[in-house]
Length: 89
Image (tube, rainbow, N blue to C red; front, side, top):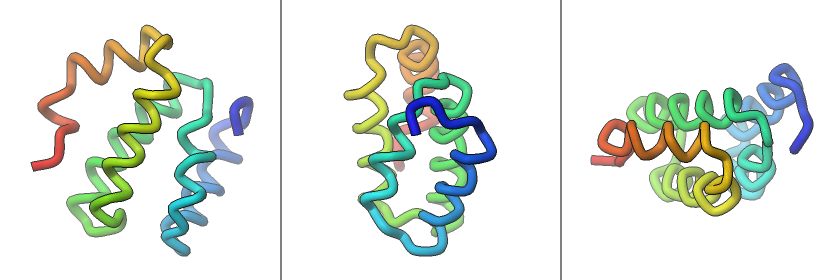
């Protein structure tokens, strides 16, 4: 999944939404594409509100992305700039 294009990544994300298999989240956060990761953060915030994500899964997504991509300037800057928006309430 590190090199997956958006179409492949979206198929796996849709599988997660159907099965709610937390193991899939590990693969989804492996992408090296900052656009995919930033979109995933935004989608996760939106879907959490719509109850598509289990609450603890949202925390795992953010934690995994930070752990795996803290050296990716685009992703880290996005998280820092939008921390209030992406922080669960």
